[in-house]
Each structure stands twice: as structure tokens, then as C-alpha cells.
Image (cartoon, rainbow, N blue to C red; front, top):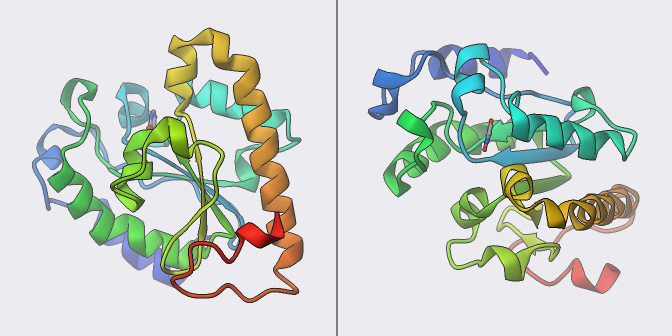
Length: 207
Ligand code: URA
């Protein structure tokens, strides 16, 4: 989705000096754009491979994400993949709340506006807490939350967590299938419902 709005945004983004992560990054990892009104996966921040190559989720976590997508008959071209932070934190430490707030408000929120996702899938607790600061990862997994803008959010574990806890692998596959069923329902419901702003429960009645 390389329209003029995005090109302008990206030109600013690749020069970003708004926080100290600019000093240690190799490059800004803008993210991968799929179709608008589609599925948007949001992770935490680029790791070593992403920083080197310039694309999100290209390391071991990315391979697992690809595997989960392929069981749904999807590949990366069918979805969008972004991170809260566009620059790799040194030694893969977690981004600080300030770094997330700066990067999120300057870039991610605008990318979301441009993509108009039908469903946001947060991967792990960092992006979940970016949107819902009080949410707990395990309790929220698989529950539909709704942003004030009306966009539904479906929390899933981060692939790196599953790589550390291989016993959750089969459950993770099922989580992706359940998420995709939600997405397909949302796509179909889109023609018959109008989301109610600021209402966390309006979608619950439909599932
Ligand atoms: N982990 C993330 O959260 N994002 C990436 O892009 C890679 C690994």
C-alpha cells in the first residue's frame, strides 16, 4: 500500500531521531503492509535479524509466524505486520514505556489509521499493554477487545514464547485458527453492523 500518504510517513520515519534507539539501530524497520481493511499483526520491536534485513519478523519468531499463517492458507502478502518500536533496542532488551509512547504516537498510530485494519492481532504482552495497559496476557489471550476507534483487537502469545514453550505449539495453532474464524466473521458482519464507538462489548453479542 505505497500511496502518497505512506511515502511521506515513511520518509519521516526512516530519519527518525526522536529517541535514543536511533543511535544503535542499523535501520528503521517500517513494517510490512498487506491489504487495507485486513489483518494487522503487531509485535514488539525488531531483533538482530530484522535490524540487519530491514523487515519485521524475519528471524526464528517470524518463521513460526509464517508457519501459523500457512496453516490458514495465508502468507505475508495477505496480512500486515508491524512493531510498536521501529528500531532495535540494544541487546534485544524490551523497549521502555517512553520509547513505546514516542514510537507509537509518532508512527504506529498513523500506520494503523492508514491501514484501517479489520482486526489487530497483538503478539505478546508488550503490544497488548500498549493498547490496554491493565490487560494481562494469559487472561486476555483469545478474548476480543475493542479500541476506542472501534477496531477489534485479538491478543495472541508472541511466537518467541511458543519457541521457548514447545508444549504450547498445538494450542498456538488452534489459537490462530480461532482468530482467523473471528476475522472471517468480522469481514462478513461488516456488511450488516456498524461498530459503536467506545463500546467494549458491542461485538460480544455476535460471537
Ligand atoms: N519480535 C518482534 O516482536 N518483532 C520482530 O519484528 C521480530 C521479533
